[in-house]
Amino acid sequence: MAPAEPARSPRPVLVPLEDRAADNLRFIRETMERAGSFTAVPGWGGAAIGFTALAAAAISSHQPTAARGIFVWLAEAALAMVLAVLTVAQKAHAARVPLFSGPGRKFALGFAPPMLVGALLTAALYRDGDLRLLPGMWLLLYGTAVVSGGSFSVRVVPMMGVCFIALGAAALISPASWGNGYMMAGFGGLQIFFGLVIARKYGG
Image: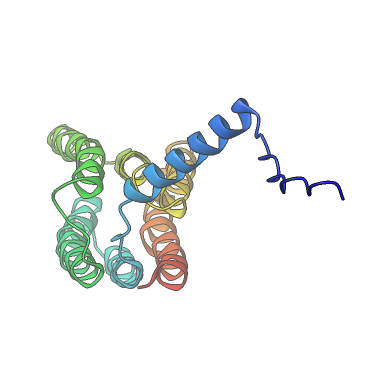
């Protein structure tokens, strides 16, 4: 009787080196994207800011002069900033996301410069008495800030910024009397719409 041959172990399946490298790169990229996203952008807070902007647009439309209408929007900007800081801090605390390190710091560093430029240009245009460009400029620079900071956040945030930029460009080539309407559409309508999208898809 012939001796039984030893059982042969199955040969390992060889995965091409380029496939393994592609899988590793894909894993690293997805890990970095998750780690590099600032997810504390507030949806409900953004929607609340939008509703205060609608109120500001209504109040501004009844002002006797353009300068007084601009002051209404400046007050709205201050209120929006307070609401944004409070709601971002609240969402970051609930999600245990650091505010001033990692993605949060990158978001702030991307968002702040266009807003600072907007403040300086506003002061210069108000000094020279040229208020016609303010609505378009505000929408453009806010959109730029959102796109820049939003590159470190979830995908819908830079999309919102692009919509603000488009609206600001339209405001610049439209009659000056339409400015309040454009700001109502942007800081009110777009802010509410995207705020609700963020709240629904990314947890408040």
